[in-house]
Image (cartoon, rainbow, N blue to C red):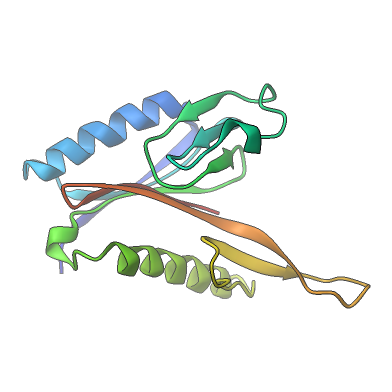
Amino acid sequence: MRQIAWTVSNGLIDYPVSLKKMKARVDLIQSGDALEQIWLLQHPPLYTAGTSAKPEDLFNADRFPVFESGRGGQYTYHGPGQRVIYLMLDLRHYRQDVRRYISMLERWLINTLSNLDVEAKRIEDKVGIWVEIDQTSGERKFEKIGAVGVRIRRWVTSHGVSL
């Protein structure tokens, strides 16, 4: 079993600070000079823009700062009370399979929520984790509870999930 450093940061971490630390750690992991890391943190209110983000998709763009992230996906809101989990893992020691990695992250979130008695699931053709909202009309409606957005460079992951 590989050793992974788990870090929990208290307080709100500014996004540019976390991005700089994440990039530095990824470089150290790639060179073999640091353990893989899973970092739990929170950000002040902000949006991150993934590589698929289109400016016209962001409502109230002036409400919070917007940061280019370099990860996949579209826009994601981050803020106090939301747990962000950045995973810096070397997939060369696991399976070099991006879809499998994303699926593993989704299963991890679903299992975590299940431990809290929250029933969450994947929805075909959508990324992330969803919960069904009670509707008085009888219509099924789902809300996103977990976001997934990753970057993989030379098989070392960065970014991750938020809940």
